[in-house]
Figure 1: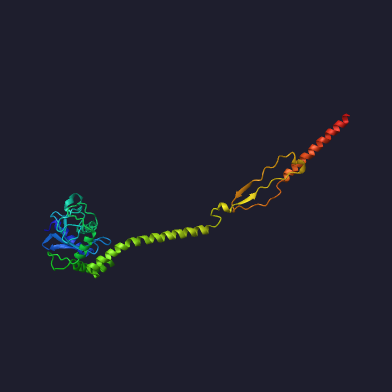
Figure 2: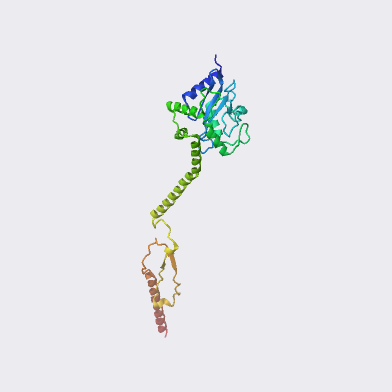
Amino acid sequence: MASPSHRRLLKEASELASHPSPHFTAHPVSDSNLYDWHFTLAGPPPPSPYAGGIYHGRIVLPPTYPLRPPSFRFLTPSGRFEVNREICLSISGHHEETWQPAWGIRTALLALRTFMDADAKGQVGGLDVDVSVRRQYAAESRGWVCDGCEGGRSNEEVLREWREVCRAKGVAVDDDDDEVQGGTANESTASVEAEAKSEPEREREPSDTNANTEVASSEQKSESLGPSRVGVSPQQQVQVPVPVPVLPASAEAAAPSPAPTRTTPVQTTTTSRPTTTSDAPWLDRAILGVLVALAFMIVRRLAKSEEY
């Protein structure tokens, strides 16, 4: 009777075959040993220095898998990991405390592809070499052949055949993957470098376009508002004199001197009113006052004349 570990590994092998990924393939080295697997892994996409590279490695699983994590080692030189040495990762046997039994070989390979772009920072099995060296290793990795695998096929041949299987299963393969397959190693490396150099220019173009669009839209908005919505500048203000009441000649001496004419700035949007004779009530009161004074003087004269 098969152990739970055997059943789990058989299930994962079947799942990798029925739901393949165009970026990697993995399988047991032999049917008699399910705890020793080999994998072929495509490098991360541009602008990674590993873009265009195809790497081969080994997975050793413990008898208690998935309760304990597997161990990984690269057999192809990459400039990121030491060759044929166990790698210290959160998904490997160096960190059993972070491993989760729900993870599997597919999850580990996806994480391993992502970890390639991370800094080594002194990790066990990690390397920190120049980018140019990593690009050179990526170009050379495509023709690398595993001595322990049957068929004597290169990494590029293995991955090309596997991607044909993916297409037959209805799995989409990126156009970038097809371009990498169609060219030589040197051509793929040169295209990766050209794309990395042109990346800043593509990032600047949308920002310039957005800036021009914002300026144009703001100008159109200010034009559509018209004078009723946009503020009037001080140069556009006009001076409108305030009317001063006119006194009659008889009351001019008694009335105080008129205040000097003042001007009040108003906006052009204000409708100026024509000057009207708003001083009619004032004239009536002045005439009435004069008449009252004359009547009083006449009464006094009459009173004096009667006394004499």
